[in-house]
Amino acid sequence: PPPTSIHAQVLSRPVARTDETGILVLDPTHAEGRFKGRMWVYCGGVGELSYLYTPTKEKEWPQRHLAGFKGTLSADAYAGFDALYTSGEILEAGCNAHARRKFREAHDAAPKRLEPQWALLSYQRLFAVEREAKEAGLDAEQRLALRLEESAPIAKGLYAWLEQLKPKLTPSDPLYRAATYALNQREAMLRFLEDGRVEIHNNRSESALRQVAVGRKNWLFAGSPSGAKRAAIAYTLIMSCKELGVPVREYLIDVLERVSSHPATGVQELTPRGWLAARPAPAAPT
Image (tube, rainbow, N blue to C red; front, side):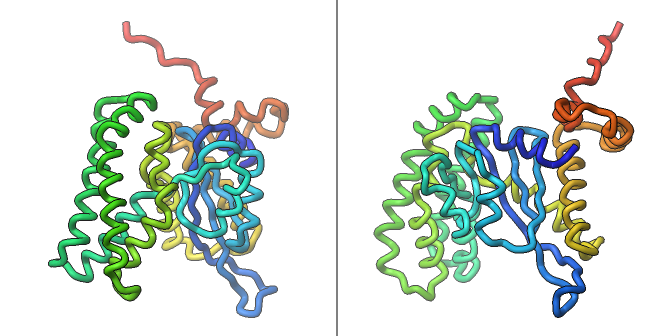
Protein backbone atom coordinates (compact mmCIF):
# COMPACT_ATOMS: atom_id res chain seq x y z
CA PRO A 1 0.00 0.00 0.00
CA PRO A 2 1.17 3.59 -0.47
CA PRO A 3 2.73 5.12 2.64
CA THR A 4 -0.12 7.64 2.71
CA SER A 5 -2.38 4.89 4.09
CA ILE A 6 -0.29 4.44 7.21
CA HIS A 7 0.39 8.17 7.30
CA ALA A 8 -3.37 8.79 7.36
CA GLN A 9 -3.57 6.58 10.44
CA VAL A 10 -0.92 8.73 12.13
CA LEU A 11 -2.75 11.96 11.27
CA SER A 12 -5.99 10.62 12.72
CA ARG A 13 -4.49 10.28 16.20
CA PRO A 14 -4.76 12.95 18.90
CA VAL A 15 -1.02 12.71 19.54
CA ALA A 16 1.73 12.28 16.94
CA ARG A 17 5.50 12.21 17.23
CA THR A 18 8.18 13.11 14.72
CA ASP A 19 11.92 13.32 14.19
CA GLU A 20 14.31 13.27 11.23
CA THR A 21 17.84 12.24 10.27
CA GLY A 22 20.14 12.73 7.31
CA ILE A 23 20.87 10.22 4.57
CA LEU A 24 23.38 10.44 1.74
CA VAL A 25 21.74 10.41 -1.69
CA LEU A 26 23.56 9.98 -5.01
CA ASP A 27 22.47 12.37 -7.76
CA PRO A 28 24.55 13.18 -10.88
CA THR A 29 22.74 16.52 -11.26
CA HIS A 30 24.52 17.83 -8.15
CA ALA A 31 28.03 19.24 -8.47
CA GLU A 32 29.47 16.66 -6.08
CA GLY A 33 27.31 13.86 -7.43
CA ARG A 34 25.60 13.48 -4.08
CA PHE A 35 23.78 15.45 -1.38
CA LYS A 36 22.37 15.01 2.11
CA GLY A 37 18.65 14.31 2.09
CA ARG A 38 16.41 13.76 5.08
CA MET A 39 14.41 10.82 6.37
CA TRP A 40 11.48 11.77 8.59
CA VAL A 41 9.40 9.50 10.78
CA TYR A 42 5.88 10.23 12.01
CA CYS A 43 4.54 7.99 14.79
CA GLY A 44 0.90 7.42 15.65
CA GLY A 45 -0.48 4.42 17.51
CA VAL A 46 1.39 1.16 17.88
CA GLY A 47 2.30 -0.12 14.42
CA GLU A 48 1.82 3.28 12.78
CA LEU A 49 5.27 4.45 11.69
CA SER A 50 5.33 6.59 8.56
CA TYR A 51 8.76 7.27 7.06
CA LEU A 52 8.99 10.00 4.43
CA TYR A 53 12.00 11.14 2.41
CA THR A 54 12.63 14.78 1.49
CA PRO A 55 15.60 16.38 -0.30
CA THR A 56 15.99 19.10 2.35
CA LYS A 57 15.08 19.91 5.95
CA GLU A 58 13.11 23.04 5.11
CA LYS A 59 9.98 23.84 7.13
CA GLU A 60 7.71 23.27 4.12
CA TRP A 61 8.08 19.51 4.51
CA PRO A 62 6.60 19.03 8.01
CA GLN A 63 3.88 21.49 7.02
CA ARG A 64 3.00 19.29 4.06
CA HIS A 65 3.36 16.06 6.01
CA LEU A 66 1.10 17.25 8.83
CA ALA A 67 -1.55 18.96 6.73
CA GLY A 68 -4.92 18.19 8.32
CA PHE A 69 -3.47 17.02 11.64
CA LYS A 70 -5.13 18.44 14.75
CA GLY A 71 -3.71 17.43 18.07
CA THR A 72 -0.43 17.41 19.99
CA LEU A 73 2.89 16.97 18.21
CA SER A 74 5.85 15.64 20.16
CA ALA A 75 9.05 16.88 18.54
CA ASP A 76 12.37 18.58 19.18
CA ALA A 77 12.83 22.34 19.20
CA TYR A 78 13.63 22.63 15.47
CA ALA A 79 12.56 26.13 14.37
CA GLY A 80 11.02 24.68 11.21
CA PHE A 81 8.18 23.29 13.33
CA ASP A 82 7.23 26.68 14.79
CA ALA A 83 4.82 27.59 11.96
CA LEU A 84 2.81 24.46 12.75
CA TYR A 85 1.75 25.86 16.11
CA THR A 86 0.60 29.34 15.10
CA SER A 87 -3.01 28.37 14.35
CA GLY A 88 -3.49 26.62 17.68
CA GLU A 89 -4.74 23.44 15.98
CA ILE A 90 -1.44 21.71 16.76
CA LEU A 91 0.01 21.91 20.27
CA GLU A 92 3.74 21.51 20.83
CA ALA A 93 5.07 18.87 23.21
CA GLY A 94 8.79 19.04 23.95
CA CYS A 95 11.22 16.23 24.62
CA ASN A 96 12.46 16.26 28.19
CA ALA A 97 15.06 13.68 27.25
CA HIS A 98 16.62 16.36 25.01
CA ALA A 99 16.62 18.84 27.90
CA ARG A 100 18.08 16.30 30.30
CA ARG A 101 20.82 15.50 27.76
CA LYS A 102 21.99 19.11 27.79
CA PHE A 103 22.33 19.04 31.57
CA ARG A 104 24.24 15.79 31.21
CA GLU A 105 26.66 17.58 28.88
CA ALA A 106 27.07 20.32 31.49
CA HIS A 107 27.74 17.67 34.11
CA ASP A 108 30.31 15.90 31.93
CA ALA A 109 32.12 19.22 31.40
CA ALA A 110 32.43 19.70 35.18
CA PRO A 111 31.62 16.44 37.02
CA LYS A 112 32.10 17.90 40.50
CA ARG A 113 29.78 20.85 39.93
CA LEU A 114 26.61 20.56 42.00
CA GLU A 115 24.12 22.51 39.86
CA PRO A 116 24.04 20.04 36.90
CA GLN A 117 23.76 17.18 39.37
CA TRP A 118 20.71 18.79 40.98
CA ALA A 119 19.05 19.30 37.59
CA LEU A 120 19.75 15.69 36.61
CA LEU A 121 18.29 14.51 39.92
CA SER A 122 15.10 16.43 39.15
CA TYR A 123 14.80 14.76 35.74
CA GLN A 124 15.54 11.40 37.34
CA ARG A 125 12.57 11.91 39.67
CA LEU A 126 10.30 12.97 36.79
CA PHE A 127 11.19 9.90 34.76
CA ALA A 128 10.72 7.69 37.81
CA VAL A 129 7.07 8.81 37.95
CA GLU A 130 6.68 7.74 34.31
CA ARG A 131 8.10 4.30 35.09
CA GLU A 132 5.73 4.03 38.04
CA ALA A 133 2.76 4.80 35.79
CA LYS A 134 3.88 2.29 33.19
CA GLU A 135 4.51 -0.49 35.68
CA ALA A 136 1.08 0.12 37.22
CA GLY A 137 -0.59 -0.05 33.81
CA LEU A 138 -2.31 3.30 34.27
CA ASP A 139 -4.52 4.68 31.52
CA ALA A 140 -4.11 8.26 30.27
CA GLU A 141 -6.48 9.77 32.83
CA GLN A 142 -4.87 7.94 35.73
CA ARG A 143 -1.38 8.80 34.51
CA LEU A 144 -2.27 12.48 34.34
CA ALA A 145 -3.60 12.39 37.89
CA LEU A 146 -0.36 10.79 39.07
CA ARG A 147 1.70 13.38 37.21
CA LEU A 148 -0.24 16.27 38.72
CA GLU A 149 0.30 14.84 42.19
CA GLU A 150 3.95 13.83 41.92
CA SER A 151 5.55 15.37 38.80
CA ALA A 152 4.05 18.87 38.83
CA PRO A 153 5.73 19.93 42.11
CA ILE A 154 9.08 18.59 40.89
CA ALA A 155 8.79 20.48 37.59
CA LYS A 156 7.67 23.67 39.34
CA GLY A 157 10.70 23.53 41.62
CA LEU A 158 13.07 22.82 38.75
CA TYR A 159 11.94 25.76 36.65
CA ALA A 160 11.85 28.17 39.59
CA TRP A 161 15.45 27.20 40.36
CA LEU A 162 16.50 27.61 36.72
CA GLU A 163 15.03 31.11 36.61
CA GLN A 164 17.17 32.09 39.59
CA LEU A 165 20.25 30.28 38.29
CA LYS A 166 20.45 31.54 34.71
CA PRO A 167 21.28 35.22 35.48
CA LYS A 168 24.34 34.00 37.42
CA LEU A 169 25.78 32.10 34.44
CA THR A 170 27.80 33.19 31.42
CA PRO A 171 26.74 32.36 27.85
CA SER A 172 29.85 30.24 27.30
CA ASP A 173 28.90 27.96 30.20
CA PRO A 174 27.33 24.62 29.11
CA LEU A 175 24.99 24.94 32.07
CA TYR A 176 23.79 28.30 30.74
CA ARG A 177 22.95 26.67 27.43
CA ALA A 178 21.11 23.84 29.17
CA ALA A 179 19.13 26.24 31.36
CA THR A 180 18.30 28.49 28.40
CA TYR A 181 17.04 25.56 26.35
CA ALA A 182 14.80 24.30 29.15
CA LEU A 183 13.42 27.76 29.96
CA ASN A 184 12.80 28.69 26.32
CA GLN A 185 10.90 25.44 25.81
CA ARG A 186 9.11 25.42 29.16
CA GLU A 187 5.53 25.39 27.83
CA ALA A 188 6.29 22.55 25.43
CA MET A 189 8.33 20.62 27.99
CA LEU A 190 5.48 20.74 30.49
CA ARG A 191 2.78 19.69 28.01
CA PHE A 192 2.81 16.20 29.50
CA LEU A 193 1.29 17.74 32.65
CA GLU A 194 -1.82 18.73 30.66
CA ASP A 195 -2.57 15.49 28.81
CA GLY A 196 -1.98 11.96 30.01
CA ARG A 197 -1.71 10.73 26.42
CA VAL A 198 1.40 12.83 25.83
CA GLU A 199 4.76 11.24 26.62
CA ILE A 200 7.37 13.07 28.67
CA HIS A 201 9.89 12.48 25.89
CA ASN A 202 10.11 11.76 22.18
CA ASN A 203 12.16 8.59 22.53
CA ARG A 204 9.86 6.54 20.31
CA SER A 205 10.65 8.69 17.28
CA GLU A 206 14.36 8.60 18.06
CA SER A 207 14.23 4.83 18.39
CA ALA A 208 12.41 4.52 15.06
CA LEU A 209 15.10 6.59 13.36
CA ARG A 210 17.88 4.63 15.05
CA GLN A 211 16.96 1.80 12.69
CA VAL A 212 17.79 4.11 9.78
CA ALA A 213 21.07 5.16 11.40
CA VAL A 214 22.12 1.55 12.00
CA GLY A 215 21.11 0.50 8.49
CA ARG A 216 22.93 3.47 7.01
CA LYS A 217 26.22 1.99 8.18
CA ASN A 218 25.54 -0.98 5.90
CA TRP A 219 23.88 0.51 2.82
CA LEU A 220 25.86 3.80 3.07
CA PHE A 221 23.69 5.79 0.66
CA ALA A 222 20.55 5.81 -1.47
CA GLY A 223 21.40 5.37 -5.13
CA SER A 224 19.01 8.10 -6.25
CA PRO A 225 16.21 10.33 -4.90
CA SER A 226 13.67 7.78 -6.13
CA GLY A 227 15.63 5.07 -4.33
CA ALA A 228 15.43 7.10 -1.13
CA LYS A 229 11.64 7.32 -1.53
CA ARG A 230 11.43 3.55 -1.98
CA ALA A 231 13.59 3.08 1.13
CA ALA A 232 11.10 5.21 3.08
CA ILE A 233 8.25 2.97 1.93
CA ALA A 234 10.20 -0.14 2.95
CA TYR A 235 10.95 1.29 6.39
CA THR A 236 7.29 2.27 6.81
CA LEU A 237 6.01 -1.23 6.15
CA ILE A 238 8.75 -3.22 7.86
CA MET A 239 9.04 -1.14 11.01
CA SER A 240 5.26 -0.90 11.40
CA CYS A 241 5.13 -4.69 11.16
CA LYS A 242 7.81 -5.07 13.81
CA GLU A 243 5.99 -2.81 16.26
CA LEU A 244 2.85 -4.93 15.90
CA GLY A 245 4.66 -8.25 16.00
CA VAL A 246 3.55 -9.01 12.43
CA PRO A 247 5.78 -11.55 10.64
CA VAL A 248 7.43 -9.33 8.03
CA ARG A 249 8.15 -11.99 5.40
CA GLU A 250 4.64 -13.45 5.57
CA TYR A 251 3.08 -10.00 5.42
CA LEU A 252 5.11 -8.80 2.44
CA ILE A 253 4.56 -11.97 0.41
CA ASP A 254 0.82 -11.89 1.02
CA VAL A 255 0.39 -8.16 0.34
CA LEU A 256 2.56 -8.11 -2.79
CA GLU A 257 0.55 -11.00 -4.23
CA ARG A 258 -2.77 -9.26 -3.57
CA VAL A 259 -2.09 -5.55 -3.94
CA SER A 260 -2.61 -5.32 -7.73
CA SER A 261 -6.13 -6.74 -7.54
CA HIS A 262 -7.17 -5.34 -4.16
CA PRO A 263 -9.80 -2.55 -4.34
CA ALA A 264 -8.34 0.89 -3.70
CA THR A 265 -11.13 1.66 -1.25
CA GLY A 266 -9.89 -1.13 1.00
CA VAL A 267 -6.21 -0.22 1.03
CA GLN A 268 -6.27 0.17 4.82
CA GLU A 269 -6.80 -3.60 4.98
CA LEU A 270 -3.32 -4.05 3.55
CA THR A 271 -1.54 -1.91 6.12
CA PRO A 272 0.18 -3.97 8.85
CA ARG A 273 -2.55 -3.00 11.33
CA GLY A 274 -5.37 -3.89 8.92
CA TRP A 275 -3.65 -7.08 7.81
CA LEU A 276 -3.22 -8.23 11.41
CA ALA A 277 -6.85 -7.45 12.25
CA ALA A 278 -8.01 -9.65 9.36
CA ARG A 279 -5.96 -12.66 10.50
CA PRO A 280 -7.98 -15.45 12.14
CA ALA A 281 -7.51 -15.62 15.88
CA PRO A 282 -5.36 -18.57 17.03
CA ALA A 283 -7.38 -21.60 18.07
CA ALA A 284 -7.81 -22.06 21.79
CA PRO A 285 -5.85 -25.01 23.23
CA THR A 286 -7.92 -28.12 23.75
